[in-house]
Length: 117
Image (cartoon, rainbow, N blue to C red; front, side, top):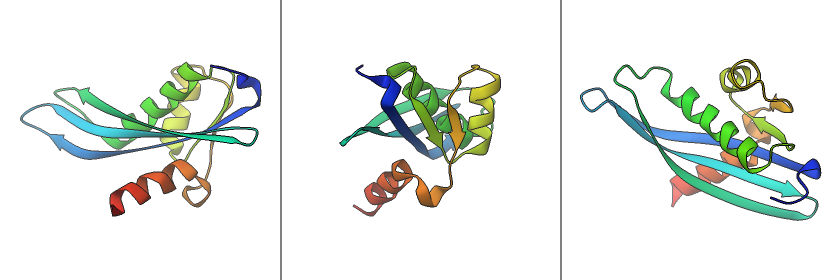
């Protein structure tokens, strides 16, 4: 991707719960990428397979952060999930990942808009 040093990414995720008998959860990852005056919105479908799936919404939030850092490794990334931010900093050792309130997260607003349609 281009010029990631000035890029800010807001991430969020949602999921439809999980099927204990099937061992998977489906969800959407939302990324709002701001680079100067340019704003791009991305939605990615994601399925997590795990027989003992726990903390599934946090795992989707973490996947959104990982997707953002894969697309723009040097970007500043914001998420409204404190748990996912903690995992990103500890497990993946990502730098430039911070918590932001839900009210200030445009990626979350995008998911809310989609739910209404």
